[in-house]
View 1 (cartoon, helix red, strand yellow):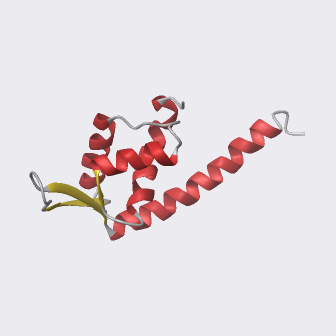
View 2 (cartoon, rainbow, N blue to C red):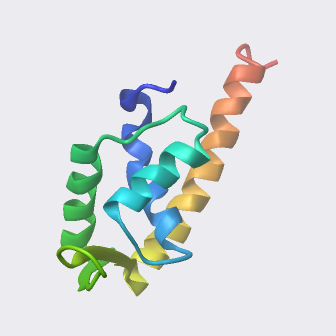
Length: 111
């Protein structure tokens, strides 16, 4: 299992990647993260909702209520157009970061 410290800087990117394809709500996103990572990363509920608040303040995502058949309305999150731009920028940045780190891991002496 990957530590939450190792993943901290990537939580926003993970959330945005999931919201890029469809609107969703916290519990579903949490389960998707666990499933897609094959259980190697579990985002704590407090971390997830803190990220939602932070991303919403930055106007990268927006929330809305949707009626459910049972219980109270559920809060859904969708990516904004600004969020989509940021997501694509951060995705490219991650790919470049990955290349740099792999270079050091594969050839630490730079030869």
